[in-house]
Length: 193
Length: 202
Image 1: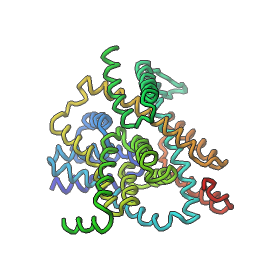
Image 2: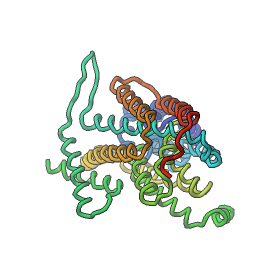
Image 3: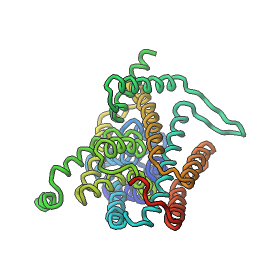
Image 4: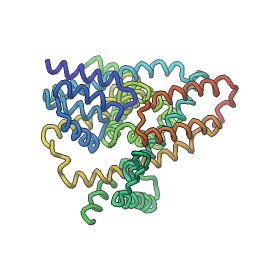
């Protein structure tokens, strides 16, 4: 029975959250707490754990909770549940779009949406930049900016590393390599400091 | 099983599907932070290196992924897999992107529930966070350079970016999907009804 619940609850999460990422957290929290699968404190730890592991938060959570509640089968069913709605809906959209994407009005509509998508990426770059390096908060009419000097140093180090590698190898450095390099620099920097 | 294999042979060669699966496996393995990070990886791998799709199509699909249910990484994998290799392409691209986080998280739940208490993990993650910010800034600049530069695009971009940042600072909850819908309507009205110089790029 637990298998059925795992699948259905995570299917619900996958179906009713639009926008992915952090937009999915409130619904996952509700499901997990009402079912008693995790306590509130465990849930917060879980968010931290999902951040340090690759992949969408929803999948990380589904796999972890599924595995705790029902082993490998539970993990598989919970993950399948969270992925299935996105997969099916997107498949349908892909099939439809393939027919109409060249049409003038579709192109015009997508043209407007595209600019918004770029703006959303720009805003998440700005927000993440500020969150990590200099968090800004607003309370009682005051802005508080706390500058995280350690992380700024690390950030500069990573940029320096990137451009150094670019000059040495004389070609583009892939994002995958940047992530690997960043994790190594993070370890080295902290043990030296 | 036989049906799958024969469908594979009929539709696309086995190799194409395998390449699709492996590419998305790699993307799944390095998409720390989910959707947006995945986008920087997709841009590098599919637009610049492999030239499977162009920048515009990637952005259009991102907008659609942000307005459909589920994780953005899954939406993008399904669409790109389908446009490249039909149903099987979609299936294997999605499988590829799900498998690494699934395997890693399963291992963590079995053996390393206290992963976060290791110093070395925290330090590595500090680095990864900074690296991801850097990648995001870089891809934003690339995307902006490639976008259309008419007045409506400039206005949409500045207004949406500013509002999203302001909403975040003041902790106003506002779903990005409304911006995408507004963008869609404006795009349809401005680019669709007012005669627009046909695709300047070609």
